[in-house]
Amino acid sequence: MGVLSTVTKLLRASTESTHRGDGAGDAPTGAYWCEDCDQRIPDTAVEDDSAPDCPDCGESMAFERSPGTTGCAC
Image (cartoon, rainbow, N blue to C red; front, top):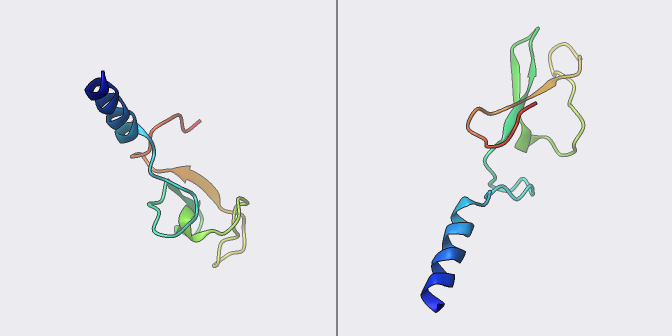
C-alpha cells in the first residue's frame, strides 16, 4: 500500500495549480486590458484585487483570463 499512496500523492500534486498569488515569479493567469488604448497589464503586475486604471486614458481596465488557465472564465 505504500507505493500506491505515494503514486496517488504524486498524481494529486501534479494536477494542483502552481499559482501561489504572491506575485514573485508567478505566471500570469490573465491580464487587465483597455480596449480603447490596446494597453495590457499582466495580473501579476497589479498589487491589489481592484482593476487598475489605464495609464494612457485613465479609464478602468477589464480583466480577461488567459486561455491557458483551467477553470471557468465566466
